[in-house]
Image (cartoon, rainbow, N blue to C red; front, side, top):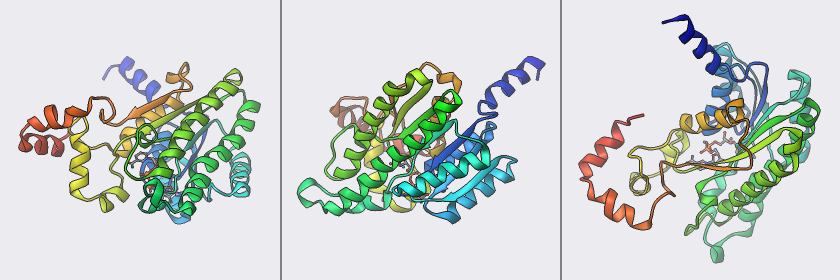
Amino acid sequence: MTKETNAIQEDTMRRFEGKVAVVTGAGAGIGKACALAIAREGGRVVVADIDGSAATACTSQIAAEAGQALALAIDIAEAQAVAALFERTDRHFGGVDLLVNNASAMHLTPRDRAILDLDLAVWDQTMATNLRGTLLCCRQAIRGMIARGGGAIVNMSSCQGLSGDTALTSYAASKAAMNMVSASLATQYGHAQIRCNAVAPGLIMTERLVAKLDECTQRHLRRHQLLPRVGRPEDVAALVAFLLSDDAAFITGQVVCIDGGMLAHVPTYADGGNAARTSRETAEAAESPRR
Ligand SMILES: NC(=O)c1ccc[n+]([C@@H]2O[C@H](COP(=O)([O-])OP(=O)(O)OC[C@H]3O[C@@H](n4cnc5c(N)ncnc54)[C@H](O)[C@@H]3O)[C@@H](O)[C@H]2O)c1
């Protein structure tokens, strides 16, 4: 390998050197992949999760790879706990430059039904965590970012926040509202060099979903994607890392879909184009992803 190639690799692989990131819900799934991606590029990461042992497991993995991380057990729906999270971050790492609002009350989604069947407690709890929790973290982070001369925030939204469904009423509304919080934040604090974008994943096969989502539903969702493989947490982490980095220095206020094309086609696609492929072709393509 030439000297220049080495220099290019070093350049692109250390985008978060000297930066401090807070990632919520980083004990598992997409949040954990984001925390690892930031740490692998030199960022110091606060791994905040309601599940303290999951947070510690993530920081142990980061430490094993020679990265720096701090695990904190925290419920983002609690204002005092969120304030304490950012105080600890300031004391331990000297401030925050990057925030990934990833935590969501995923445990409520099986009870999140159609409007007339909806338990309003599910609506309230979903909003308290997904929307209010995100807002609380943004408020704490923005103050510190203004003092430090700027920062970048990514809010983990969802394709569900961009299209209607037969259930998931509260989850979808919370994600749509998070998109607007992102646009408001970008509008109100862009002058202070703070960028904010939302990321809207489609089907991303986390450990939780692998264990929970039946094969029939997975097949159905995949049939509506344009790319013949499932999404992975690392796919989302790569997008989040890009949006947090200076590579995205002129991107703010956007909602970026990462869904294998799920929302990018006319409704007839799954019945006509995709379904016209033999099931064997589709199965083979799904099993051997081309990246
Ligand atoms: N997996 C997908 O297909 C998918 C699709 C679209 C959007 N998303 C979004 O991505 C994000 C992560 O989803 P995932 O699938 O990786 O979930 P996950 O359940 O695998 O991980 C979520 C993590 O958040 C933590 N958490 C839950 N409530 C919390 C709280 N109140 N405070 C702090 N931490 C809390 C959990 O302990 C867990 O570690 C969520 O915002 C979700 O809405 C996921």
